[in-house]
Image (tube, rainbow, N blue to C red; front, side, top):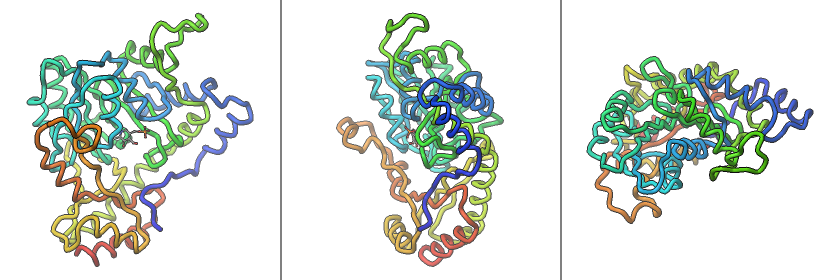
Length: 364
Ligand SMILES: Cc1ncc(COP(=O)(O)O)c(C=O)c1O
């Protein structure tokens, strides 16, 4: 089976994790957490980074630290993984959905302003599959209405927006390091920000609102969201190799692009001229193909090739579907046609050629 996306572990992971085990610094204390935070912040070009147990925790923490709660509204894309929308719901705020755009499949920024009400407090763009959201129009809207921007960059570490890293543009940026992400800590996440007070608040809330020097005095309701030393040890080793990983992802995408150029039923991903795509997942649309996306996935699986459908629009899921939000035609179409193809860093050229040969046979 050619898997969809598996971790690449070939650097200092064993050495750094062994150091945690040898010294017994396996939990929240120990040097790797702050080192990983420092190096990650430097890589992203943000002033502060707070490591968390996963990406969902980073998103929840960012929203809570910004003071978002019951009665507030947060604008989110409907075509996304469910985690950022759930993070809004955890705070007691209401997610307000926006349709997807046809070009990059991200939140359609032209549709955001009409969703703003007196209750809107933040916009939460999600950079899907490695391609950035067009952030400048969102920054303009945020400035006009006094809103926060929390970027969900979980799927797009290494992607760039007009010379900046995604995650470093808004008030806060959140990342995930689960097993299939560009770099992994097993499970883990990171919140980055240039706002020192926000970073301090997030750090405080992530450790049960603990006050240094005041044993068991907790002046706020905190969370146990910190990353462990073992996770951070692995993250540090992975981060050391990020440039190689990104090069491999781009090379994979280029090979897919050239091989699939003539396949009529497959629409390839684009990279806007203001963006640097990280190609976390090489994703296509199945459009005008004799088979449906799901039939194609089944045939690929029969040939030993793992693939994955795009997300279901979140407004259609049971916890969210009882409210009427409007129509989201683009998200519905993209969700039905979108397909993620094998994209591991360690994918071999002959494996990509095998996937493409099969796609040409089935969709050409
Ligand atoms: C867009 C997006 N946001 C958030 C998350 C949540 O990250 P985690 O699984 O680390 O909680 C993920 C991935 O899992 C994701 O794809």
